Amino acid sequence: MTKNEMKAKVRELLAAGKPKSQVFAQLTGQGVQDWHLDYAIASYADPIRCSQHER
Image (cartoon, rainbow, N blue to C red; front, side, top):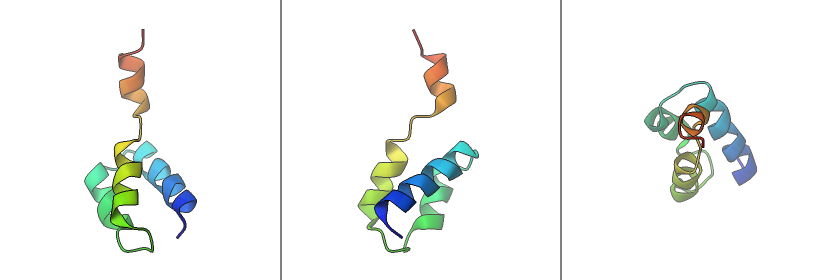
């Protein structure tokens, strides 16, 4: 899996409401380094949270 495919999959799973820990467990060991996966998960901006804190 390439980094772009991994990022798309992370966004898809998180948008579907999966917990971040479950997304990490599911995608670990699929050809992407764990720190790339960590960063992609941590940098995901939750749309609900963004709308709550919008000014």
